[in-house]
Amino acid sequence: MKGKIIRVAGPVVVAKGMAGVKMYEVVKVGEQGLVGEVIELEGDQATIQVYEETTGIGPGAAVVGTGQSLSVELGPGVIANIYDGIMRPLEILKEETGVFLARGVTADNIDHKKKWKFKPVVKKGDSVSGGTIIGEVDETGSVVHKVMIPPEIEGELTMLASAGSYTVKDVVAKVKTTNGEEEICMSQKWPVRVARPYKEKQEPSIPLVTGTRVIDTIAPVAKGGTAMIPGAFGTGKTVTQQSLAKWSDAEIIVYIGCGERGNEMTEVLTTFPHLIDPKTGNKLLERTVIIANTSNMPVAAREASVYTGITVAEYFRDMGYSVALMADSTSRWAEAMREISGRLEEMPGEEAYPAYLSTRLSQFYERAGRVTTLNGSEGSLSVIGAVSPPGGDFSEPVTQNTLRVNKVFWALDKNLASRRHFPAINWLQSYSLYLDGVTPWYEEKQAGWRDMRDEARKLLQKEEKLQEIVQLVGPDALPDNERLILEVTKLLREDFLQQNAFHDVDAFCPIEKQNQMLSLILRFYKLATEAVERGADVKDIAKMKIKQPIARMKEHDNKTFSKHHDELLKKMEAEFKGMGGKNE
Image (cartoon, rainbow, N blue to C red; front, top):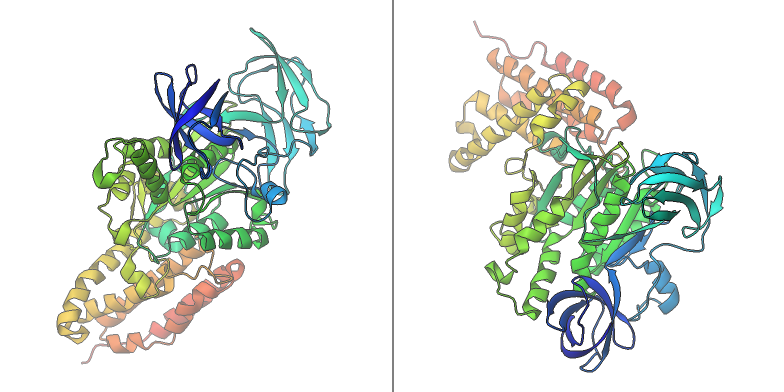
């Protein structure tokens, strides 16, 4: 199929003579063969969004159909790679064109020449179907890549390669189906706009442990859940997402830098290769896939990058892994949709975003979930999206439409950020609808966890009300029990909820340590309340020696913290003993 361009509007071109081309078919545009995708059909005219810069392309240039939809090749070699928005490996492109990428350059998603050690896990004659794991490849020191039968194939295994080294294009199995014999390689292609199938969705009931106290304790997210981080410029969205990518207990991380500034993406690309995974001791990049599409890259590729990333994430979910996907940020994705919609002269919706904005957001977040895969294993895909509302206005369309389809809301607060309180997640505005579902898991780790968490939040709610009075009349006008609440909530805010993402120890806080820290602060509150009832002065409690060790406890080594907690508890109880005493 070959047509000619009749109009160019930025990344959108219109070509005639395209009868027979299909919606979402990939086409090659111009002499350089720029990658494009058909997004609208009318008669023999096709509207195409081009994933590369269209400068120099004009009317009369040729457009050639490929007969394929926008797909990615999935197999050994995906992990530890850095891709652009349509999954071209940036390292390979750099070798071919230099630092500044040339247009029209293509490269295979994964290396077709490299040989991988394949180990079969089934035998010839077995019945197999979509999702069946037929072999394993040690892709990195952290990830075992499971070679699966493509979802649409079912039948008897008539040939299976013996253990040995093969490329991703070598035939490692043959399956006799009702339509003939199918050859199976270690790689498979999948269209990015189509969700990969699974057997059934399960209720998310296991938390995604992030190591960030304000998240794990106040508003936890479940594995297979969805979460959003909205916040104004400078409130720490990117740092928070990077912390989650570094420290969450997901087995595979997919990080999508969607329309972010180049310097922020550069930080990710330069720091990740040197980070050590606390669980395996290997490099963190050995279980990470990065999709980099910065704000100066073609806008159409930004629109595709989120689909590319979530397709990769679903692929590893189907192997039975727990996967966490970070999309930073979906606002830039929505802006790309708005720009393309404007070029198409579509009827604009609120704030000129396309009318289908909410539908696209829903389709994206609905691909998350904790599922029973086609092979019967359990896998999960958690999606965490950052939102960048202009001026921090949470009432704007992207934030509101994302709120409708997300169950966790981590509200970044500009006032907290200006006070240098990080992560600047507002503990009163934020919420999690997974809280009841994950409570049994937390209770197994620490009996009474939910009561502790609720008590801490109630104290913080009381503090907010008391601060209004304090600003009018000062703290000395409050009764002792309310002044005590202000002292305890200061410990909660500064010594528990505040966390240093760049500290060697405090960057990650295990659940056990979080529980012990919280229980210690609440024990302080109980002992202080009893002391005040005995007649102790709140000013004396504020000057207690134990407060300094409590303030520094988050920096104590995680491995030996349990012993340190017991020592602090003994010192605290000893210091409170005898404090106060009723006057006769």
